[in-house]
Image (cartoon, rainbow, N blue to C red; front, side, top):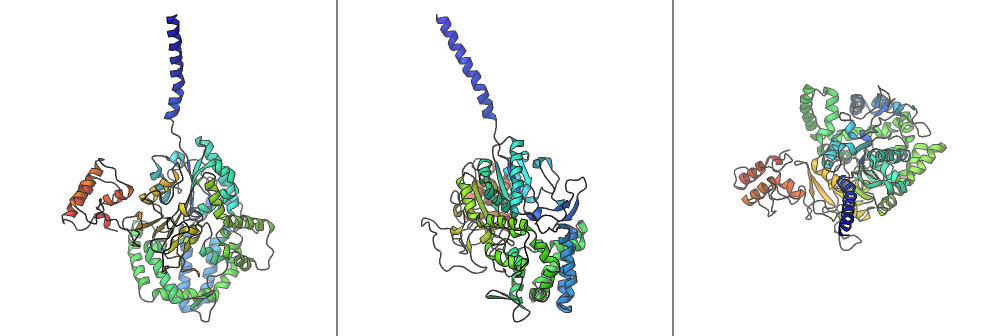
Length: 607
């Protein structure tokens, strides 16, 4: 009897052990949530027969052909200051036709040439190691995600930006399903870069149930969710409006003189002179080693010329004169027909500009029914943005919005004073923040409607309480449009989308609502509450934050380097005094030498 009882117990124990084996194996399986990166329109080229073995490039803002056309147009514009505005018209209109004719849309809002489209990347990024989709931003993000999401689970979605976002949302939905199937995943995370966030917004709006079931997190980076001021001005013909003299521009109640535009242009160049002049010098001198060396010298020479007294004013007045005297002819000779039939551009028109754009571009003409339906659907997405983001969050999607600011917007329209990242107006990219024009501040800093905390920026130029998601919207001062190619910016994105719970702006001192970009260090840091400028209150090497670099700080850096202590994100930046991205004993040595006066600066402090 005892022997039988023991046998039964033994069998039960064996059964329990066997039952645990598959559970243990399952526990060892790591579930990876794939990431779908929705690229910005600026990174998407258009091809004829894109799926063939030899697709022909028909549009790329990074191509030498595109730069050469722009260079010829700029040269004609500059020469018109002496020859008269009409002299530049043939070259300008020819340039517009060269750029837009191959990618023109029909009256229905579809490509005139049905063979023109985009390359498709249906497999993960790991399958395309040398392709153009491996942009600096994509590379930085994949590196930051590497510990949780490898390149076999990272996908890049490209789309035809000429088409309506609602049409592209249909394709995004199918793409998400394909990624889920290929990875065996229940959900994906979305990163919408620039215009990619507009596509994500259309998808969340029109396919709410699908998104609730299929999307873990969605981050929208510098996305024109409520429109783009520059495109809005272009589409309603408000590059300029004729005033009493040729050097003035009137927009409603405000006059913009040539001198004012010149100052704005100088600010734009000073924000990033290398980027501003890169295309020009590369077009002239080529991109080989010799061209790069000569280009560096040419850029510096051109920069000095542009910064010389009166140069920007003259350039701005020339631009004003041309648009005032010949702008209507440019629209009439092709530009108007090209831009009005691209539904993708209509998604960039702010709601307050929509009626003016329709009146300017169509007047009394009868709009094609199919095109009108696309416009209505597109406008509906923009109008419902705040509701869409809130509903997605309520459905369990971790929602994040990031907007940059404090860079001069491209001063080619009447919106020269918009607070922006250089391209996108911060008020639109943040989905509703109240922003002040450049160089202006509110006299008093007030709390938001939630009296327990404030959503006002330390420099007193942004009120974020009016955002669609005030607790989940971040602002980075000084970082230009989509310049997320640096380690700390990519780590910030990874911190958001990999979280199992919804992140918010109060969660950690590492990533408060307002941050600032240090150009010399290429890092983002919390914006100091005292309204100071980059890099806030943080001093290189000062790990205890007592305001001085001492031998005690060197000891802490050394402990970081040998992993006896774990630094916070901010301390990783503070302790990396040689700027190589790692904390090593060499950093501790530099801190010690600095603390006793043997060196006056750290290597990381250089440009």
